[in-house]
Image 1 (tube, rainbow, N blue to C red):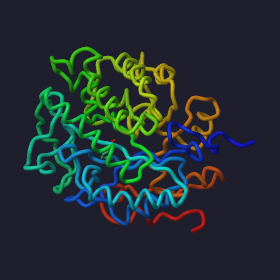
Image 2 (image 1 turned 180 degrees about the horizontal axis):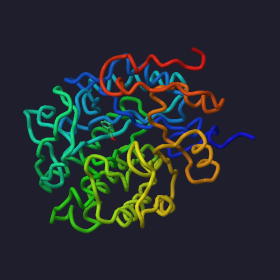
Image 3 (image 1 turned 90 degrees about the vertical axis):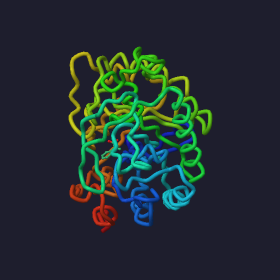
Image 4 (image 1 turned 45 degrees about the horizontal axis):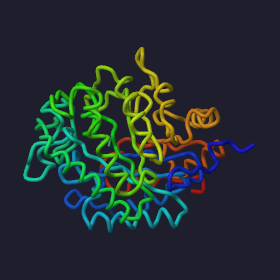
Length: 361
Ligand code: 8OZ
């Protein structure tokens, strides 16, 4: 019997050879000034092309969207040319790759932003968390609230980045609407106290997300667009008064875009899968009409089980893909996994990026 996990699946314009996605993983190794990736990124992603789908590390859609040192961008011609080498390498190795489109909103620091400007956010509320700058971990800077008349420009920045992604040869994009970054900041009540059309009711808090999805899918097609949500994650100082209600509205609203997939962080990002009373992943998942990609704490057994039971069509695996370039092959053989070296997760060079051994050595 072939386990479903290792069988192909098509979603939108993409056919994946198996049901395992490499989850987006921030690695802070791009050129800090240009936001360009380099040859080490080409090798890193090529080595992991056995994933049914690679979702790249989050890439900022504009200079304003950056929140950490040495993260890559997808908004300049130089960045496109650099990413093109990555997409060619992954495609030559038989893989599929989408890029995660990122605006950090308030999770940033003035030292990372053009002219030392303040981070932008739905409301001028500091997340009270730390980000990584040239000086190491630093408190996020006080953000300024975006004016409503700036939001069409933000939406346009997503469209521009999506178009640049297609130009760079990506199979599609994943809109990062999770983990306490800009779109999630608009969605959730703890970070959005606006009194205009973008705050207050669930409809209003979801307005920016829907405008982004409308514009991005109009530009590159729903078949090349996915989205990542983290309804119940407290990541980056985020909170919502009623996440079940918020995300029921969001997920129902997403159905009209015929997206390639919905990718959900099922719990606390990179942590517990426990939910509070009244919170239900299954309840949300059931509302989505398309391909569902599950993430957070999945191991081999859980991934096999979730694709067999029909809970998910795809499973996104994060940290194990750092240390195991041939993770799909290891899962097939039920082989042992390499341990990741946490000290090289963020920043540095090839050490801890491209030097993990495969089963073949
Ligand atoms: C870890 C460090 C920096 C950023 C996310 C893009 O949580 C991230 C991220 C993760 O989605």
